[in-house]
Image 1 (tube, rainbow, N blue to C red):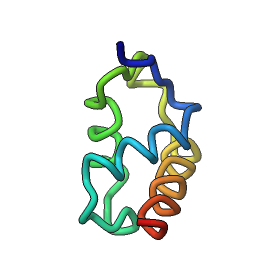
Image 2 (image 1 turned 180 degrees about the vertical axis):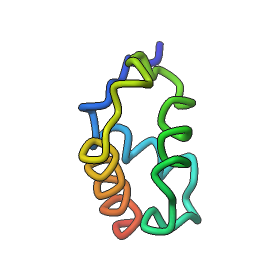
Image 3 (image 1 turned 60 degrees about the vertical axis):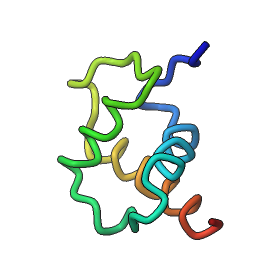
Length: 70
């Protein structure tokens, strides 16, 4: 069963995005695309309208850390 994830789960989202898009440099992703990637993840259970720039930035940085470690 997929665990529910929310906008505040930046680290978990970053891990999932790295697994789904291993060749993508997260720093090249526009926030509009990042928003779409997040809400399309399995288990995403939050209100898409609750995103904001700081949440997207936290997700992007968590994803970037995973990208660098890969």
